[in-house]
Image 1 (cartoon, one colour):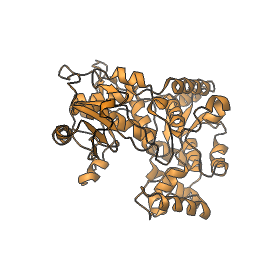
Image 2 (cartoon, one colour; image 1 turned 180 degrees about the vertical axis):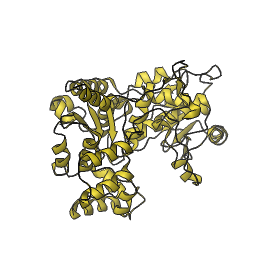
Image 3 (cartoon, helix red, strand yellow; image 1 turned 90 degrees about the vertical axis):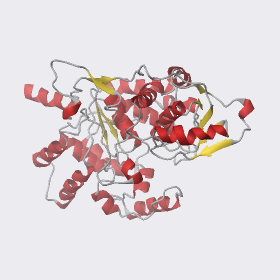
Image 4 (cartoon, one colour; image 1 turned 45 degrees about the vertical axis):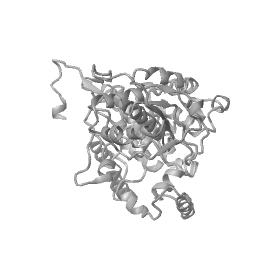
Length: 447
């Protein structure tokens, strides 16, 4: 019994946070908003979490260029075609008030400037302070309004002033709350999941858009593979058209299939009665692709299963609002596991780190693919040997504190920045500090 209990507790126990806590208060040298030189309009792009990161970067940019930030416009043209406004998804008043000591934020551009000529600018990706203070600030000489045509990845991940990094964290983890009605339903979903006991939130990125974009067709029928190829070819802003699906999978660039996730979770030791919340949009292929996962774990839950049609209806036609509900349940889960390292997975992982390094298991997809191939070939079976290998692979992939990863050695230019770990995926060391304790000998130096 005691051995069983210890194994059970180990499955759910978070890693040690080693005394790291949020430290995002501005320093004494951080200046309040200076006299505004003009207005910054922001057109966000992408899905919910890509937009969230972009919005918070633009808060920092507005501070750097002494701009008044106009509440950003959410992306209505992406794959999801969501008509939501900022206030439909986020708590607009709280956002404005909580950042008042950093940036002046207004809901609309003043009427007298509505027809003014605007500087429409694609800010250079992964830019530092000098770019905004030296290049973008010059636009104030000729314009009163600057419009950022895109908001994603416009600030560097690293080598920014400490107060700018802390401002990004205050914006992302604290100021950018979801709208009250989303928060209320999210809390209800969490309560209903908890009624079944400790639960896993599984971000199952096995959706049509992801599979089409990535070219990942493993486990699909020829007809399904053809459909995804046509979607990719006909989506003009997806630049890569010809993709080798086998190469993608071998390199770990594909989301795990529902079948693979079932094998993975079983190998980690989670019992078949584990409650699992499926955080995702519509799973491609529906029940036919979910059957193998459900055979391993019958207690699969979702928004649609946990609340009534009437409770969910106000949100159900808005992808960003539905994604926000999944985000809340994922951040609050006992264990979070993403099947793919997209924007949602990175944002949730970072948020869980910020909240005390809650248990987050990141599958080593490249290594797992090699094991799953052996499984398919019959040289490996589910059981102790496979379990031991998968447990060993993931001992150090459970969300414990570590420094944010820099660029991959040998990369240059944009690829160098692209290869860095995203800022909001891991806010350490910029926004997390370690309490001095005589019981702890660990330090950043030995991380």
